[in-house]
Image 1 (cartoon, rainbow, N blue to C red):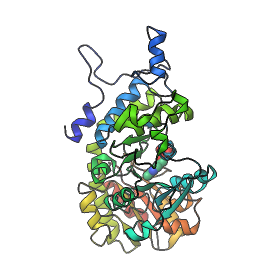
Image 2: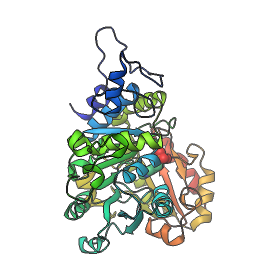
Image 3: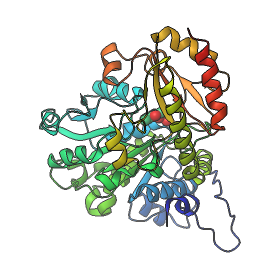
Image 4: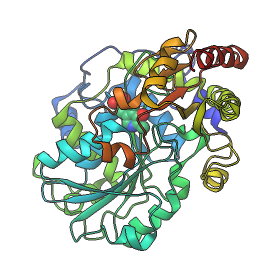
Length: 422
Ligand SMILES: *Cc1c(COP(=O)(O)O)cnc(C)c1O
């Protein structure tokens, strides 16, 4: 099936007389005929739901769809994108371990990696994504366990060279984890370029309507956890009667372990209702991504022609340095997020934002409604000036998330706001 069809039909196929739309299974527990059957569930020798902190039929249907969309062997939904990032790392690292991340990633992820994980004894080295393979290699240590990057970085709108980093990661026997939030599998499927684990904040385009925070981790099933670097996968887990994940679950070892071990202990599993809302968003994702991308291309051209703008970041612009990577990774479009800097820095940026009438000033992105944000005073406020520069953010940078309104109305709004600036 092609992606449009998968978005509508994967994960749930009603049988004769069953509801056409995905039902919301609003239940914390599941009944079984025998204690012996429940025992098998706890031994992980039998499939089945036991408790909605670990799995639920509505969420499971959406997980199956998400795995199919990215081309993975399994998926685990989480209550937020942050929970997905955290669990994706904790599933392979413990205190004393180290990993490498591109510096151009979401501000919340930088906090998690640089501050919170560090308190747990897991260290992250940030590298310039444009660095050569040799330079990146220098960041590896004997205890390095993964490499992390974002397909389209928020808010620098830079494109990550997934294949280059997959090669470096694999040469060092560690997996590549990709945050594919902005691209979505409609525009890019990182597993096709060598990514081993894909994560998303589903809060963004997947939900698309600004109604439900959520996240997901998808396992490609391709990484060799038996390479000697990951004993937690190949040695008995004392919390499950000594189960060995690679022996019992084969190519799905990573995603099963994340669920039955970490989700069991952390408890960041979404509700059935949350998964139902996410599924509604997924059903129309391809048609929305196409329109977001076309609208963004037009607004990027408009901004680029204005003499009040210092620079515009959008890969389809002729002078954009990501033209080549765009052709390779994002041939269908680059999503609806454009960032730009207005002449006159922070002061004029704020003046412009406050003058917009159609575009709303919100701490959100990737919505069907056009919205705008000033990263330096909101999402990235906690970063130091150096971290801001490394993440590709200048004080006057504005992030415009182009919605699905008629493009002429969006341009009119931007134009009248620019006219108010001297
Ligand atoms: C928003 C975002 C996150 C965090 O997701 P939440 O759902 O807000 O927790 C992670 N990565 C990227 C690229 C994001 O845009």
